[in-house]
Structures are given as C-alpha cells and as structure tokens.
Length: 283
Image 1 (cartoon, helix red, strand yellow):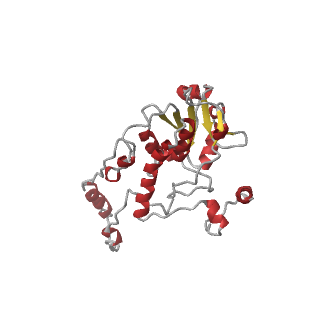
Image 2 (image 1 turned 120 degrees about the horizontal axis):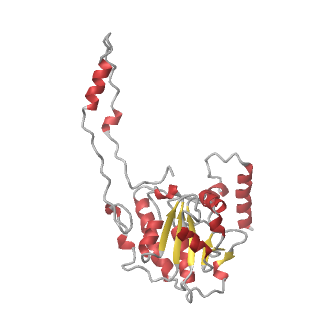
Image 3 (image 1 turned 30 degrees about the vertical axis):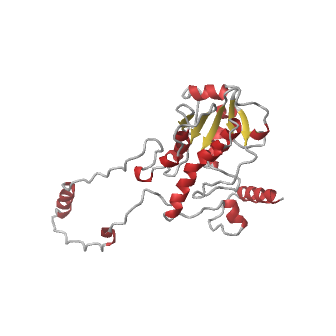
C-alpha cells in the first residue's frame, strides 16, 4: 500500500539531490571509460546490516510488541494451521507472527506456498482429511461457526485459515483440492476490523489474526481470548498512526461515499459484484 507507513524508515540522503557532474571529455583512444570503471571497482563496498529482530514477535527490536503479548502462551486445545501466500511473508506489517507468539508452540503451524499437494505437504494433507478439521473460509456452502452444536472443548479440533489478500485466498482455495476436504465454516458475527492501516475490500473483512481471535474465543468458550489476541494488533496500528500512517477505509466504504479515486477494474463483472454486495448489505 503506497500510503502505508513502513517502520523500515528510509532516510533521504542529501547526496541524492546533487546535480549531475558534467561529462568529461573523452580521449581519442577511449581509455577514460575503462580507467573510470577500474577506479569504481576499487572502492570499498559498504555492507548494510539488518536491524536486530525480536525472536518472539518477529518485529525490529526498537518497535518490539512483546509488552503487549500475554506473559504466557494462551492455554488452548484448538490447533491452527495457516496456509500463507508467499507474498505475505515479505510484508512488514503482518499479523500471523503476532498470532503465533500468543499461542503455545505447535498450536499455530504455518505453511507457505501457492499450491499444496499431498506428496509435498503430508502433514497438511493429514489435517485436511481429519474429520475434526474445519476450514475457515466464507462461501455459500459454509456453515456459521456460531451456530454449530459441536462441543469443541470436549474434543480438540483443527482450524485451517488462508492468509493472503482476498484475491490470493480465493485463488488458493480454488486451486488446492486439499483445502476443499475439511468442513467449511464462516463467521457470522465478526466485528469490524481494527487492522485500520491496511485497506480491506469490504467492511466485513478482517485480518487473519482477527479471524483466529474470534474463532478461538468461540471454540474455546472463552471471550477473553479475543481481547488478548487483539491487544498487540491494536498496539501495532496505534504505533503506525502515531508515526504518520493514515486510517484505511474499506474499498466498499470509499466506493459508497464516492471517494474511490483509483481506476476501476476493466472487468465489468467485478464492478457489478461489488455494487451488488454493497446494495445487499444496505437492505
């Protein structure tokens, strides 16, 4: 996102604004170019060092969020399995590391990739075939998690989440047969997203951490879990806003209020789907 503040702040170098030097006259024999290259090749190379990173929250030490994490991992019986698009791994403002830092070791497993075959990912395949596994992904055939009569505290269950943009998540869901094996569920009462430093497609969309927070609070029958998991996310957004980031409204909100200035997609079906979604929510 162009307007998003990246804590990996880039300091502008005054030398970048200097006027270009006038080109030197070249000798007839053309040796000046080779001599100049030789001089440049002898200059020392300055190696840039990455800032120290906290091992628990995976944030730079100077902006560590560990004070906002629970002092001890949350006691949960549910296991989370997150299939993550590779593009999410390189994002600075990620929520999955914060989620994993709040849970016991082994309760939050992350698989990175676009395609997940049974041969390459036998552990994930076994989870997808487990009758105690649920896939948290909205759709016409998805059951509302809040309406299920299953006692998840009696038997530990697995929850699979897809981490990526909505277009990436849809592509991963459609192209991976394994992800269509578990029972598909969705959240009916998810609150408005507090991840305000990233743009969401609609007002109903939430981050992976927020999905997990609501899901665990329902399955573990413990509403305080949601509060604990959202605390580091709130701290992250607060820090970014204090240092120049802006609140990002959803695309739905911007379109509805005539504030969406980006070029609309050429595919008219996408436009009609977005307009239909907005009109349905206004009924």
